[in-house]
Length: 165
Image 1 (tube, helix red, strand yellow):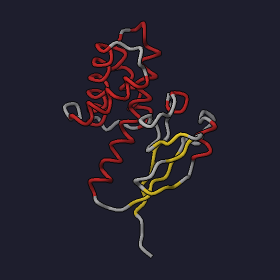
Image 2 (cartoon, helix red, strand yellow):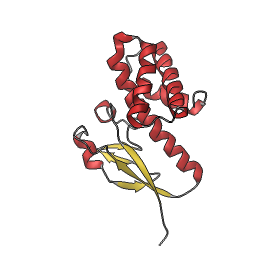
Image 3 (cartoon, one colour):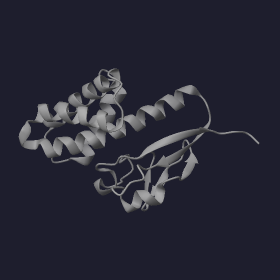
């Protein structure tokens, strides 16, 4: 993914949308760091919190300790969005017709808008409607979902093969 042009465009577009006040240089540096850290975390077999912590450490080293909180939030948010996007691309490449189900962490940190989404299932190509915003996947901001719905999102999707009846 580190040299994948679609991944580069995806990450840089998200960063520019979510953090428009960030300088182009910082966006490029964070994008590069996110993609590299995500690839390294996958090679190490890290998942969930361990993956997010690894990515946060890598990004924070690029931004400096002064911005550690922001780096951690960016890493968690973007790491999860990249993981969800990667699953989506794999399902699309398989050619299998599926539905997708929104799944939360089902703990006391899940925001109310996501609790409502837990267990909702839609066709794979459809959007979820989250508090009136269309989201293709948890963490998706491409259709205008605000930062309040995507920052630190830990939700994921499960894909279910659609069976003909």
